[in-house]
Length: 108
Image 1 (cartoon, rainbow, N blue to C red):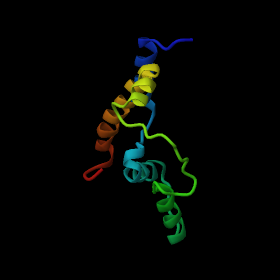
Image 2 (cartoon, rainbow, N blue to C red):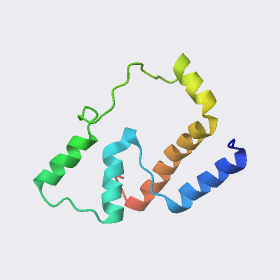
Image 3 (tube, one colour):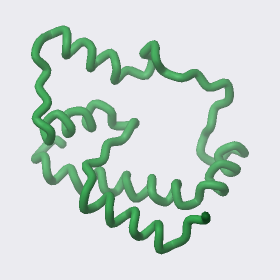
Image 4 (cartoon, rainbow, N blue to C red):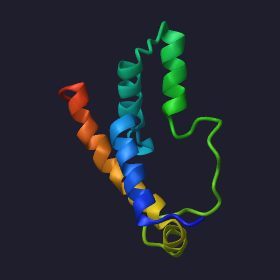
């Protein structure tokens, strides 16, 4: 089944109404929002250290990629062409992330 414009609009509305979004490029800010929204508490220094380790790009569970995908390169264009609505939805999530910052006060 193909994704159509109506599916995309519905996905945007569901995200807007039901989801607190986070971004990998804003991992620390995203985790702060999740912690605040869901009442997650870091109980001790070990918990803080674990969370900080998981937020770093070089953590041991990160999947290595042999080919770098950069916006505008051939691979990027191929992937984005085949995933048009995924790309549009990601762009919307970036906007939504900024809009949701109002829920968390100054500095969020």
